[in-house]
Length: 466
Image (cartoon, rainbow, N blue to C red; front, side, top):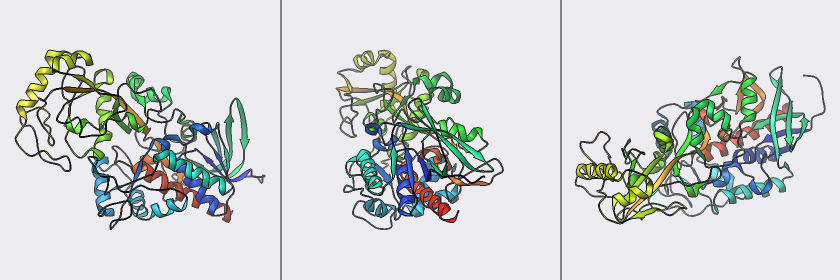
């Protein structure tokens, strides 16, 4: 590379949790930092502003977590939900670092609320942000501004140019104007490609048109595509992602956490033909909620319907939308646009298969069905007490798992399997290294926080040494 004047020590692309952790960490190590956020100031924060918590290992109770959640248990949970599709070295490093990351977050202005009790069973594993993800993002931005980080809104990183296996220059677009920058280092924390409709169709085909995007509409994946086109090594499957069942009445973009439906374990779920297609009670909800978007995506018209009776309607956090209510199953079917006779037959078959036992929402209670093609293995109670309730379900994608392969310094790899020394990745754009499939509630924020810190610290180290 020829000598040139550098515009900044570090260019951070992205405006969510991972980007902010990288920017703050690098600035605290003495690097000058320019952060470019695609969104406007009032929409800043990417998907992070819709979050509520992150999953942390801990050996004893803390001020925000109950009991203990050892690293080894966290690892076993991760192995189970990903079916082993994870980089063990990176994952174990992540889980080890999660033991202490909350203290660092507090020093950056983040506040946590007391541990959560209730049906989600998260009080032991997940620390909740006081005020939610929006408050977390705002706290980080206050810290970033106090540290003198240069923040530019409505500015999208659209291209990076590699020369001799290093970043040569970056193109940032503001409105219709492109600006060329020459940073010493770059952290790419621009999320997945879930808001890029054309790319989603490439991966999923026409069914992608029926997906709803839970988070920001600004994650177009352009930096990811640009780097893949320059022979950077990918990780993950383009059809895998954090995809959950959300209320079918949610908006196309930005519905956020309030549109998620947590009723599945206490209901039966049918497709448009009134047929059940999976075990609704397979495991506690935080370990299984992220498979349901994909399951529904595989159903006709990419729709499903959760059916509950009055015994269970108060056992979960409701959607922002009211349930559809009826005094009989045929009436409920009519309101949901389903065949009343078929739905009633499915429910009668399910009810007849329910076995005796004790219902307990706080654990895997073993209350099951017997003799069905797809048995429900926990929380299987008859649906027989009116009024009856229904929720339409659609796939709600949070972020995609196709991303950039990284090492333990968060450096990305190029085609010769060598890491690029001055470009780093953090957050959703590299989450596929940890999450080959499936999801554990709160893990995305853990990945973004820890690898954001690593990326920022390593970028600052590169600046000092070069």
